[in-house]
Image (cartoon, rainbow, N blue to C red):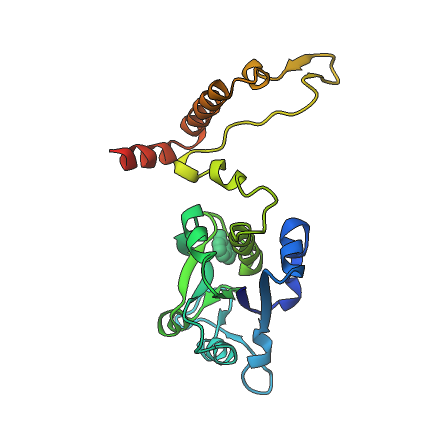
Length: 238
Ligand code: ADE
């Protein structure tokens, strides 16, 4: 069972979205476990502060390294070989499907959620956190980012998805975006009275042609919205 240990100033934000749908079912079935560690339990002095002003000046408050270390020492389990520590921050390396695949095979993932302006760099360097970002935009804190990372990871664990074969063809496998899907009604009449057909090949029953059509659609879509992926794909094939 994979264990996620979340260091956060807002433990009440968990499991949050992870308590629902197929991921919620996997949580109830103990396919994964989430423990939250409240950073406030490790606050310093009689005010129990966890943050302070930045040296050198500037806006916002910075999470103290001694608080992070104390919180980490409360959970570090030397028996775990397959473990990693992640600090979620917009200035980390970008999370991608490949990384999620690697993470989903670990026994334990410790995640530090930032709030405030940031965290003392020594906590990252000395305590060995890998900095990971979920995208080129800035959130108010790492808690939602952690839920994104967890959900992406958990759905890759065998037994979690209802249709595991859907993992094979989904977006980003082979650096392609997924082809478009269609369902009933076969002819959809919209509220303006316009009729819209499903692409004919999909109702032809001709599996080879459907496969080819889907592949072409994938390439077409990737070319249109994510040329960067297509370039990566071509480089891999060289
Ligand atoms: N915290 C704030 N913004 C973030 C992002 N883009 N990725 C990860 N953690 C964050």
